[in-house]
Length: 472
Image (cartoon, rainbow, N blue to C red):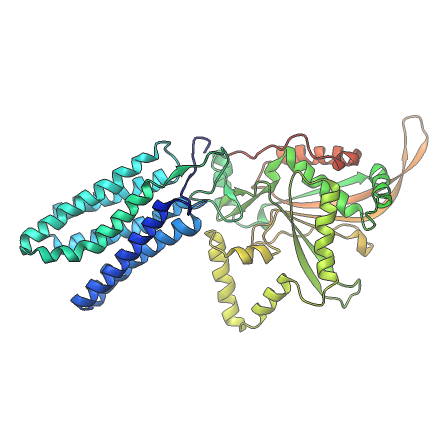
């Protein structure tokens, strides 16, 4: 993916609007001429009217609304245009051989357009090949029809297609290459992550063998010595962060660890491994009141590997205060409440549909945002409940790969080498980890680094010196 470039079109370019104008003219002309000719059979309506109208509308909308980041998706309406052209030619041609060659040419042109707009070729001017040769073939077809019918009036029937092709030609000259060398979405990516394509073969095959998240879980337990952490917490509270606690330290240290080991910010969906990049989505269950009768709700906080402990505190505290200090339900509660209105039998179908959409990366973005099952890390405090940590299962719905829990503080007497006895303070943590996102060596290296950070928590006051990017 390093050799891939990012092509885009801008709404500030007059050619982009000229393309849209051509597409509108094509749609209007098609409706007018089809009205003059009559509706015809349903097959004709679907293949010769609705299909090209859909293609032209999609092409213009994608270029205008998402041309800056998702220009490659214009390949979808191009494939619809190719199907429409193939059906049109098949209906008029009597030679199966010529029809077959025409279909092969259309498929080749559509594939070439898809490949070029995905940024795999630096010379995007190659788009002229499918966009120019396509109209040439079409004009030859029109010329043949006019000769057979022997009427120039037949040319009006081809005006919508000529305008459609002219619009595509305008957009080719509006294309630019993004000047910044950074990653941009392409085919196979999701709205919440980019697909990692350079994994070893075993890592690519294992998700098809270990299908569910719970059957692919590893369990990790560690006792963290928190003498330096306690001192650090007291210092932060003296600085004015009155609610600063061990949750913020453990979370900030985890975020800082991802600077060196970004692989832990991956997730698995649809048997493919994706990376969230710099978007660390932290989920946490909280109560509005510390009582058994108080309902739970879930918050989601977006963190960045460059966040300091102060920034982690402010982001988390802002989300907690929003839930605790307002009478209104959170977005999660509102969404869950909407699902409770669906009858049970139908709800099972809705959940199945959501899982299917999620498998193919088609789940709406607003649902991904409110879902506690989609994120980088779920971290919960058992210490606030006065009990040791638990191993919390991962969810088979969604893509959350890490679930951590820490318990109450405890003291332990230890004998040093000289025979003296000292008392130290510990916090036990337990993690349930999806083993398919990284291997055991990577997890081990991360948790060693995590412990080193907690031995020197003051480093969390400074931004990291370096943030490594995950592999392609």
